[in-house]
Amino acid sequence: MISVLLLAGCSKQTSAPAASPSGPATTVAPARRLVTVSNSGQLADALSKAQAGDSILLANATYSGRFVMGIAGTAQAGIVIQGSRNAILDGGDINTGYVLHLQAAYCTVRGITIRNGLKGVMADRVSYNLIDSVRVYNIGEEAIHLRTFSSHNMIQRCDISNTGLKTPDYGEGVYIGSAKNNWANYTAGNPDNSDSNQVLNNHIGPGISAECIDIKEGTTGGLIRNNYFDATGITGANSADSWIDVKGNYYRIDGNTGFNPAGSVLLDGYQVHCAYSGWGNYNAFTNNNCTVNGAGYGFNIQLSGSNGNTVGNKVYTNNTVTGAAKGVSNIPLSN
Image (cartoon, rainbow, N blue to C red; front, top):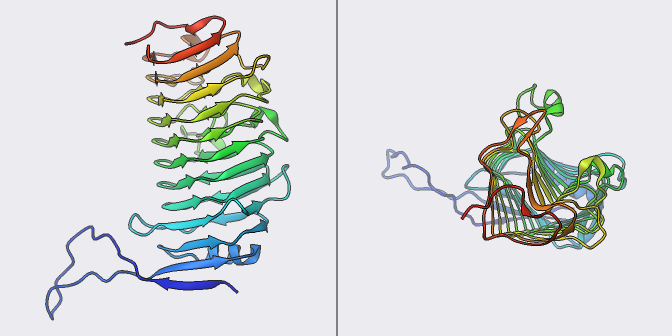
């Protein structure tokens, strides 16, 4: 049986309440619920019946199956799905399915472990979601994917490893947006404007078969900060030969640490590409510490190609690069 505990709560008042005939109106705080679950059926039921303000607490157990969160919280009363690393969502098969599919705004996923699916966490049309301190591993393709106009989300303090076990070409740790070839499938042919997302303080690798982070064309204005990238196990499949491949606009990549073991297929630390005309522009790289141990650059900015030119990208002098055979950057450094 699911355990539901009503908790006293308070709601942020965003506007003055209307007066009532008996006097000034008062704000009544909505009841908040702590919903505790301990098996797959209870978890699925709690997700399907969630209310704004709920905290769904997972006991330490293995929750076999694939789970969908489709009910939104609000800015004042988000929905939280949380547990320890010993609360494990297990999709059971790296060849198919999403272990956790987020389809609603103002949701937090915190602390749990996600494993054994084609995708780990897939987020479609969501905003203001937080994925915090989650472990994702043993995944057939990408671990965490923000897709289909998913904006203003944050991925922080997660531990991601062993991806691309089915398809190394698509084994990214974090994937933001959609490739232009998939816009017809997900965004009616329009750019997938999955904008203003933040990826902070995560440990990505080892065993990431493609890039640690892939930032797709059509996305704008994200922040990638204070992450640790371990290229051990990168395969080079589908030209994945850097920690991050930036194809969006106006991203800041700041304060990250990248490590590549000698003999790996990693070519450059960071790359920028124009995959579609008008994209791959005005990105800034600051304060990154790069141990490349590769044949390329610390920062390799594609200046021109069959899809167009990149403009406005800057690599600052406060980046540190070691072991890059061709040097720090292929473009002049900025102060």
